[in-house]
View (tube, each protein chain N blue to C red):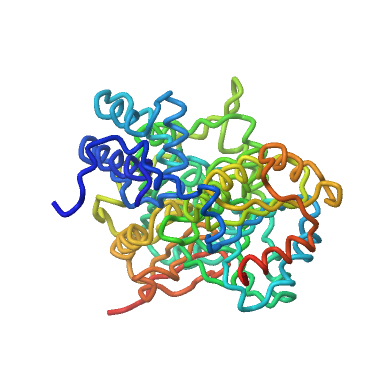
Length: 274
Length: 214
C-alpha cells in the first residue's frame, strides 16, 4: 500500500503540471519529496494536500514553491578540472569552427554561463560564439541575466578560476560595490536567456557544445533519457556534451551515440555517424 | 469496483502500522545504512572487511570527508573487503553484497524504485554528504527492513536520521560512545533514540551478520 504522503506528492506534481505546465513528474522522487516536505513545513501546511490547495488557488504560490523544486546551488568554475578539460581539450576542436553555438542547459542563476563566457573570452572564441542559457525557473533566469553575485562568494570563484587554468584575473570581469560583484555586461552580449524545459520542450538550435551539469541527477532514468536525446538532437556531429562530475551516460538509452572524450571530467563527444 | 471503497476513516485500522513491536521478529532486513565521521576509516575497517562476499544486503555509507578532492575511500575498502565496494553512481541499481560510498560533496539518497541517487542540494548540518539525508530517504524506502548504523563522529549528523529509521520500524545500531574515537555523533544518536542498541564495533559487525542468518 503506498504511503498517503507519496500519493499526495504525485497529486501535487500532477496539479502543478496541469495548472502551470511545469513538469516535475519525472524528477527523482527521493529528493523531490525531501524538498516538498520542507516546503510543506515552511508554508505551515499540515499536509502536502494542504500545500496543493495553496498552489492551485494562489498563483503566487507557484513562484514561491519553485525554488524548492529546482535546486539552485552552483558556483563559478565549479569543478575546476572540468573547465580545465574544456579549455585544454575541447577548445582546440572548437577553434576550427568559424562560428559556435553553446547551450548551457539548466543554467539556474548563471554561474555556469559566466564561467563559459569568461573561458571563451580568454581563449579568443567569445566573439564568434552564441550562448543559449536556458532554465525553467524564470526568477533564476532573471538573476542569471543580472549577473550579480554576493561578494563573499568571490573568493571561491577566484580560486576555482585559477585552478581551471584561468589566464587573467577574475577581477577583470566584475566590479565590486556594496557587497556585490557585478559581472561585465559584455559577457552577456552574445547570450540568449530563455525559458526551456528538458521535460517538455524540444530542440531549438544546432549547437557545438552542451554543458548540463548537476541537472540530470534530479531526474529519473526516463527523464534523463529524454534530456540526453534532446542534447543528441541539438549537437552537431562531433559536438561535445559536458555533464556533472558524478553524472554518466552509462545508464542512458542514447549512450551509444556518444563516445568518452574526457572520461574523468565527464565530457562526451557525439559520434560521427552518417 | 473490485476494490473495497474505504469510505470510512482508516485511522483505526491496525494494518497501517506495520512497524508494531509484536511483529518485529519476522522482519527480514533488506539494507544497511551507515553514517560515520571523524575516525571513520578505522571504525569501518572493523566492520566492512568482516562481511562475506555473499552478504545478502546492500550497504550504503556516508562518511564525512573533505569535499574538494576525489575520494579513494571506496577503492581502499574494495581492496581489503570481500564485499564489492564502490563509490555510488547516480541512478545505479542497488545490489546485494555491495557497499556504496556517497561521493564527496554530494548527498546520497535512495529512490523508491531502489536505485541510488545523488544530489547537490545545500549541506545539512554543514555536511554534504549528510547522514541524515541518506537515513531519512532509506527509512522511507526500506521501512522496517532497514538497519541504521551510527559510528564515531564529532557532530550530531545522523541523529535525526536514525530517529526516522526507528520510527519507520527499522533497527538502530550505535557505536558505544566510550569506545568511539569521537563520541559526539553516537551520543547525539542515542540521546534522540534511546531504543537504539549501543554496542562495540565488533558487536556491530557480528550483529550485521547474524541479522541475515537467523
